[in-house]
Length: 167
Image 1 (cartoon, rainbow, N blue to C red):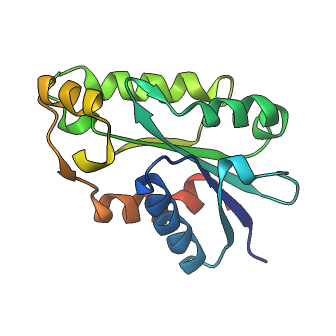
Image 2: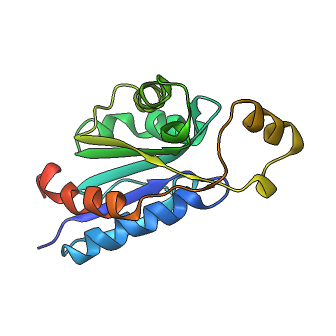
């Protein structure tokens, strides 16, 4: 019997949702029953054998919906295998500490939950999708625009999850 897995994600402009869909598709290919759902729409964790949590990183913090989800469900999350991913532009940031800061932000958003696997994926930035102030900030910080998602890395991580989650 295959394990039932929840891939719960927060998203603002859809990039994290697209990554979550790929992760879910890979886990289905491995023979598991998977629900890919926006984190705010998850009403229960009952019936799931494992949880994947994902969210975008903005201005050094993971989307607050991730923290709220973990706080609401922490007791059950502490009993299940959990994997987590964060999506942002830290891998493209010229600041050498950006990646470590992004992973620290993910860890903070997960609170007491220790994932069996966690990862940072480069995201996507379309300047037309952000306001003027954010565009100016990104220009000053020399953050490049574009789609930097590495679909091979995302697929590989998703394929490794069932083994890491002992499913």
